[in-house]
Image 1 (cartoon, rainbow, N blue to C red):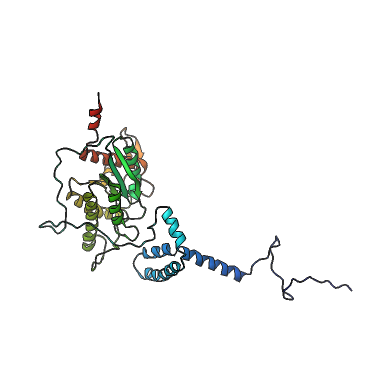
Image 2: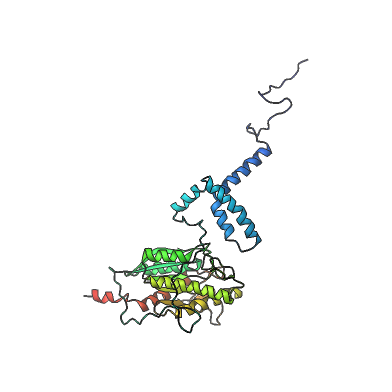
Length: 362
């Protein structure tokens, strides 16, 4: 009787066959595949450890944040020791965002000037200008635009409008950073960035918009001994006022005129109330700096006839145009164009941007 035999590979145990797929390739055991997957996850975590650690730092205060910081902190230390954080760092630098993973909570503000009889501080008001500083096609007004996500669409409209003027030069593009503000320098340190850009770009006009992400009680970079209990409370108001004033003074002492775009009313009534609180701080600080700071009130600009939220508003011809996006907060292009016109009007009040035409006329 013929006996069927099966050839056995070298080193293969009797009675055990390697698993193969339909194409004949050998399949790894489930345990091996799991180990490889875990190793890949660990390597990915080590390569991105600095970013993961910053994300943990940016979480709201509490036990979850404490645990995340402990775990990711050790991971970041190992990554740095093994030089595994270098590829990410080099890529960030190549993209011009080399400081993305830095946790920087230092708030460097210019020293405030005390004013007798006031609990807050302010700079002396600028002396009235008898003659506006004039700009020409050969001596252009340098304009820089920066802020959170709410400034992006209006900023793009301002750039387009400025492009039609031969005497305005926008510098630095629209420096809009999503999910940033003045409460959380650990997410992005605007105080440091504004000071650097004012020195680097030397703008004579600066347009900013902050506050859409600042309606919380939690702040980082607090002075020693300062604690927050609630949004809009006494401690919050003092600290946020200090930060707003610092931004204004940084631009002013750098020789620039600042236009601050206020927060609009939104579809969410509670959010609008919080925005009211922020606008009140900004507006009051702007009044103290008349001649160097202007506040653009977008709250009333985008309200309907009854003072409520309006998604659509009539244009100059009376046709209804959509001004706000679906989230009830951000602007459509038409809304940005409306803000841009108001910003340019404010700049024309401070600077002479038109008399050069008369001098060139035959």
